[in-house]
Image 1 (cartoon, rainbow, N blue to C red):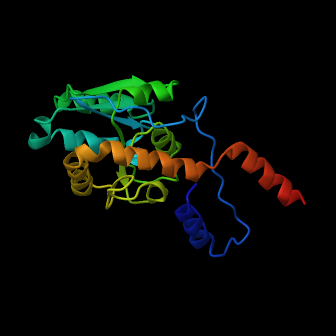
Image 2: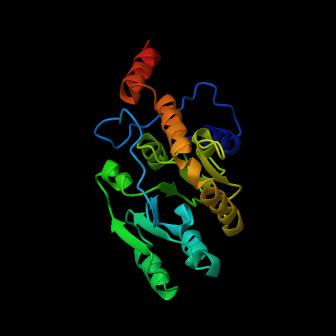
Length: 220
C-alpha cells in the first residue's frame, strides 16, 4: 500500500481515516544485501519486468509496443518478463506477432537476487498500483527502476536520482523515461547505489518487528 492508496480510499469512502497506518511488507529476499550487487557489464542492456502477467493492471503491453517501434528495435535491449498470469499466452502471442526475439518469459522466479545479478534495471508500466514489493526488492539488490509516476513509485523513485519516472502509464511517457535512462548510462552505478540506500531507509531495519510492535501498541 502507498500513501496515495490511503488518500484514494478516503475519497471513495467519503471520510477521513485518521487511525489508518501504512504497513511495509517484508521482501522476498533471504537476507538484505550489505551493498548493491555489481551491475552486469557491456551489452545487451537487460531489463526485467517482475509482475503478475495482467495487462490491465501491470501494462506489459506498453513495453512490447515500445520495443516494437523501429528506433527501439535497433537498440541492444533485452526484456525479461518474470511472473505468470492470465495474460501470459496473449503476451507471448503479441511478442511473436511483433517479431520481438529480444523478449523472454521466465515464469515465476524464486531467486530474486539471482535474477538481478543478470539484469541492469527494473521496468514497470503499471496502470494501477500500490507500492510494488518488486520495486523495493530491485532497489535492495542495487537495481534502479523505471516506472510510472503513480501510487508508490515516487515514494522510492526520484527522477534522475534514484531511478526514472514516466509522467503516466502511456507509451509516449514511457518512451521519454526510457530515453533518459539510456542517456544517463554512465551514471547507472551512482543512481543504483542511491536507490539501494533509499530502499533501506524505506523498509527500516525489520519490517516484521515493526509490524509486531504496531499491533502491540494498538492493543495497549
